[in-house]
Amino acid sequence: MDDVKTLDTETVFATLTPAEAVASLREALAGDFDPSDDIPRTISDISAGNMIFMPSEIGNWVGVKLAGVSVGNPERGLPRIMAQYLMYDSTTLELRTVIDGAALTTLRTSAVSLAAVEPALNRFTQPVNVVIFGAGPQGTGHADTIADVHDRGRVLQAQTAEGDAALRVADIVGTATTASEPLFSADLVKPGAVVMACGSHDPHSRELPAELFTSAMVIVEDLSTVLREGGDVVLAIADGTLDAESLVTMKRFSNGEITAQADQTVIFKGSGMSWEDLAVATRLVGKA
Image (cartoon, rainbow, N blue to C red; front, top):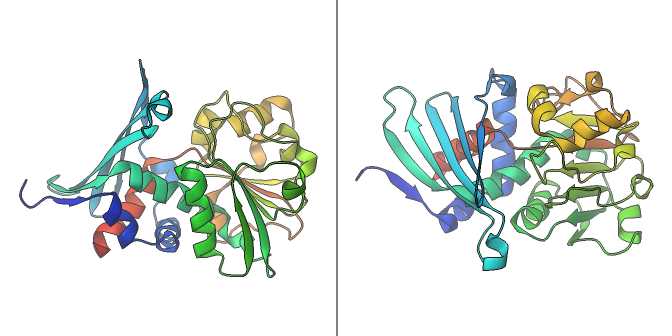
């Protein structure tokens, strides 16, 4: 174990910028790898919440994230997610690196959202208004990543928005909460806004109202994954406001195979996939 590298929280954030994390994901999508080929993760319920096992293989690396989600931890003053990330040589399966999994998760989750919608951000050539629901690591992580990627003038409101006024003028909306019911009404979101939802991987929970999907372009990580875990999408389909056949994968959108109209609302629903951690971790290890 002497030759195993360890990257703690401080090292993770000091080594890789949010924009570099986004670039690592877009590079993976531009290559031969297809998220539909990723190894499905396993989620097991336990008394404290659940345990998640997330293995993936890309190129020279095999990575595995072991994550525990304890629903009572915030009341204890502890992070809701505890995790470790293990990286192995894909040929010998020798353990090479151990990374703080919670830090990696924070970095990659917001990077996934931006990698999915980045082509749509080109429509914003003026200062933009951003509203983010959720003040935890993922909420602040999305604010930091937007600021790092979208280098034009902006007004960031990294908070749970109070009142409807901020939402009505928002160009970019992010939701990173534990909500199980919609956070706002669809008519508060202006046409042409870019919306990113990453709050849960529960098919019975939603952060976005079904009506928001009616005329939007809806981007997802992978079709089978979102239909299994993406409550915002699953419930909108059940409500009849979204056709499953219209879903666009982030690989096709990121690579420019499909584009959105300038005035069309773009929604990304992310629930997290194993390959995303590995793509970011690979870039991280290369720089550490």
